[in-house]
Amino acid sequence: NLFMTAEARMLIEAGKPEDALGVMKTALAEQPDDVSLAYDTAMIAQNVGHFEETESILKDILSDDPDHVQAGNALAYLWVTRDMNLPEARRLLEHAYRLSPVDPYVLDSMGWLCFKEGRYDQAAEFTLASLKRLFDVEVACHLVEILAVSGRDHEAEKLFRELEQRAGSDALVLDLAKRLDTVEKIRQPSEHLLVLLRRLIRYARKQPERRDIDKPAVLAEGSDVNRKLSAR
Image (tube, rainbow, N blue to C red; front, side, top):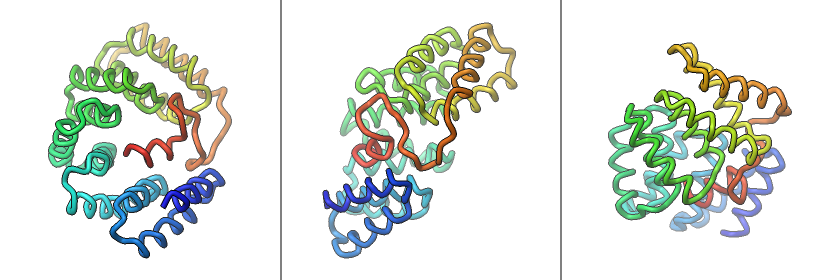
């Protein structure tokens, strides 16, 4: 299993995500009861964009083990990021949170769910708690967006300054810039939000173009794919 996962990771880093998924699916067909292998296959399928396949595998894992924290968190996070099944996502995440209340990925998922539900104060609390456990680019971007959308522009700008210094080149920051540009159009921006947006634009212009599946730089150890393999 470790060999198959390592081979899949190498294929992803080589820009061959579909080949990586094929390796994992072949291994899973030979060992259908291997939960770890199933979970890793689901995470690679998610990175490739096969969301229905990801959802199906994670549901199978949870059917056999409803207390599988990583699978519950991963499925809920998948739904939250796609703005679907939010009540069921909350049920899964509340269960995962009860089982693992200090898991940084569960905390981030709870925060992002609260954000989608419009519970901005709770969203910030959960996401900040996640960052205190593990500083990760994706989570930091979540918190910047939560703070900006909820009108806490000074805090958003301050956090982005830290993110800009520590993250290096990361496509997640470019996505954040696009989303915050929408915030500027929704409401009258404060001076702090305008400063943040200008910094994001300057940051974006410095970054080289990249393929969607390329391994991004992260603040935590390992790639985005590795993060999802190990946690989501």
